[in-house]
Amino acid sequence: MWSDDYKESKLSLDIELSTFCNARCPQCSRTDEFNNLNKKEWLPLKSVTIAKFKKWFSPEDLNHIKNFHFSGTYGDPGMCKDLYKIVSYIIDNSDTTTVSINTNGSMRDEVFWWDIGAKGQTRLKVIFDVDGINQEMHEFYRRGTTLSKILNNMSAILETPAEISVLTILFKHNQDYLDDIQNMCRKLGVKNFDWVEGNNFIQSIYKFNDETGNALQLE
Image 1 (cartoon, one colour):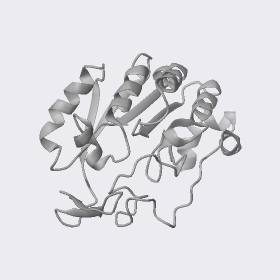
Image 2 (cartoon, helix red, strand yellow):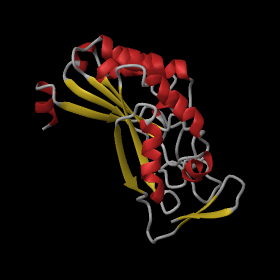
Image 3 (cartoon, rainbow, N blue to C red):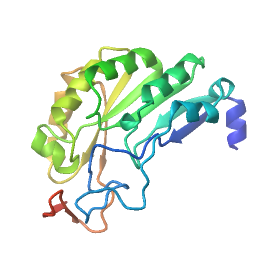
Image 4 (cartoon, one colour):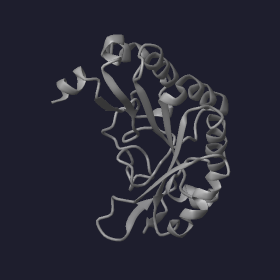
């Protein structure tokens, strides 16, 4: 029961902080793959504010929670305006609670990522999405993001004690470059890696229309 985990400070929560995103990934839950990669019409644009987060979780609550995971199912946590304030609130008002963040990392600037890493220290883990060794390969799926900006932001937070990981989504166009992607990130100081296969395929081909309406496909 979750109540037992709460009492024993073993509860881990997965929270969507925002439905805003700077990327237009074709297989994402928020993306309309046949409407020029815009967000799906039924999805409202919202972000959690620090005031709302404090209403949800008192300082006493924070100490009963093992980890807050800010995922990116319907938006990127990095697009939440109050992300730094929320992480600071958790760190400042709990003793051992940890935070993990999934992000494409192609937003904000290097100062922001250094600051959030310095605040979270070893209690913060950030998972960056890197899907190619160059811009063309990376953005074929991770559309709307800039690989050089991601690598610069990742380099900045790597100067802090925060734990940094890289996640790569594999398709036919990048699967043979996984070692190269990881080696590129290792040169920056990344030590932790994971990968998954693109998982929204019904058959071996996933068709979509790009930002200007051109018909493309993932394999």
